[in-house]
Amino acid sequence: MPLATAARPLRVGFVGLGHNGLAHAQAHQRLGRSVIAALCDRRPDRLQQAATLLGVDRLYQDDAICAAPDLDAISIHTGDDQHLEPFCRALAAGKHVLVEKPLANSEAAVRAMVAAAQQADPELKIQVGYILRFNPVFAALRAQVAAGALGRIYYMEADYIHNLLYQQQQTDPVTGRNWYLEEELPMVGGGSHPLDLLRWLSGQEVVRVRALANHVAFPQMRHDDCVAALFGFADGSIAKVAALYGPRCAMAPYYNLRLYGTRGTVERDRLAVAAGDDDVHPEFQPVTADRVIGHPYDAEIEDWLDAIAEHRPPRTSLLDGARSTLATLVAVRSAVEDRELAVPSLSAEA
Ligand SMILES: NC(=O)c1ccc[n+]([C@@H]2O[C@H](COP(=O)([O-])OP(=O)(O)OC[C@H]3O[C@@H](n4cnc5c(N)ncnc54)[C@H](O)[C@@H]3O)[C@@H](O)[C@H]2O)c1
Image 1 (cartoon, rainbow, N blue to C red):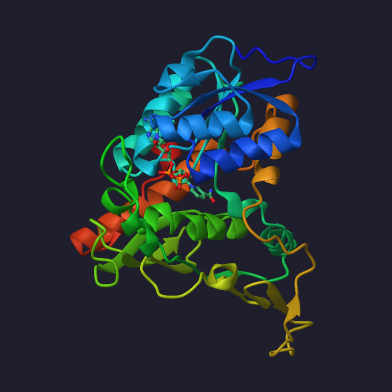
Image 2 (image 1 turned 180 degrees about the horizontal axis):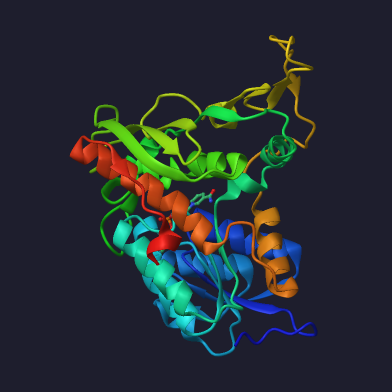
């Protein structure tokens, strides 16, 4: 069982101290609600840099950190293909877990992680890092959708168009490789962000997918760098998600989000709602919410810490995050096999 009590702050260990892991650890320090008890990275340079920056001297180079008896929680920020082992080890040792998205980059690994969570202590709180859910604009839009402002949603779009060409210049000195170039699946690592957002906003589950892909803009990546997928949802609604890693431009604002409903429309951070049946062309109004620059890591971490303290599920539970990841993995397979595929329901098969 986890060791934290009301009188003793949560003791957290961090696995993976690249840009993302360091940002999480710094957010924990800023929030002051937990103790950064130990750090782990297989790269000695990154481990030392993080140790100095964070003032932590208990250091690991392998995932033995996940079983350290005095830790209550493990925060996992390794590359997409490296989440499985520390995740399973941490759960087996009775730790709460925050694991970055995508949950994994193979369908088998997603299933193994769902199985590990089902065998673990049900009191353990697992947050999957689908951070768009913590953007106040998207949260405000979700409240409007839940209140029925759009009527019935029948079509959605959102994209992950992210220039990652700079990754060509980077190599991991321990492995002599760069996982972004060799392992990353843009529809999964990137595209699962907007797909998760659309699932969360609409409250609907994906049941099938058809995708196309090409490999033109970023040939240094092993996998296709441009993927466009049409997802079919259980209620008959349709969503288009594109993932591009080699565009020569900045990221599209608000992930090109668009929601079309029988009463209204969302276009990025704006909303148009019909006053009545005769109002066929309502004006767009900006949604009322704070505009966040960058990643809202603090809100995501606070939700995880609150979920642990309050014994309630975090905003993106393991099964919820697993569904977003799995749907995009099936999309990648759809492009490879050049056919439409069913997206399995994880709870039914688990
Ligand atoms: N939620 C978000 O908005 C967001 C943003 C950026 C990255 N991410 C995700 O965070 C994760 C990390 O991304 P990054 O850009 O920081 O990657 P990165 O490659 O820069 O850092 C990963 C670190 O993990 C270490 N590592 C890898 N495998 C390890 C292992 N088995 N044991 C110990 N250390 C290991 C590597 O040495 C490296 O320092 C990825 O899954 C990525 O998709 C999420």
